[in-house]
Image (cartoon, rainbow, N blue to C red; front, side, top):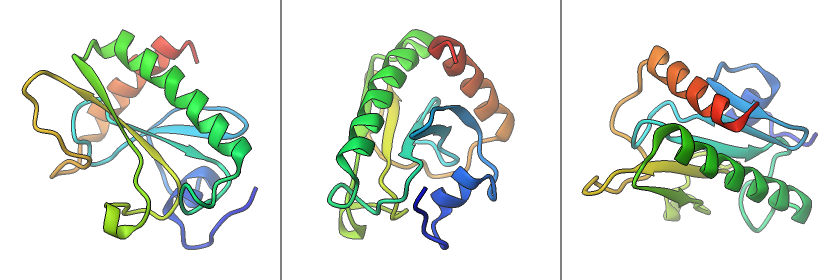
Length: 140
């Protein structure tokens, strides 16, 4: 596994920084966003470091995309949102705050303000409860 020593997401993959994990496989990791734009906001990352879409390998991109689709179905089943916003940004100018390729899945309700990041950290117990509901829907 390639990693960047100062990358927060690489540290999450390594278990050096805690996260509320939903599921993982050999190539990808799903975890809850700690500053969610809405309840159930999750992130999918490749376990191998790549800063952005231009750097990620085709194999890792395919793995992340498959995981995103699987997760979107699980979020729909577990949380019944009106829609799911799927966001992937590249570079600080585009709003990327962690320079490790990642995809946001943000459950949305009709009339909800659209944003990629929330304004405040979520409570750990709420994240854990949502992660469990999504994990159960994944069958993980």
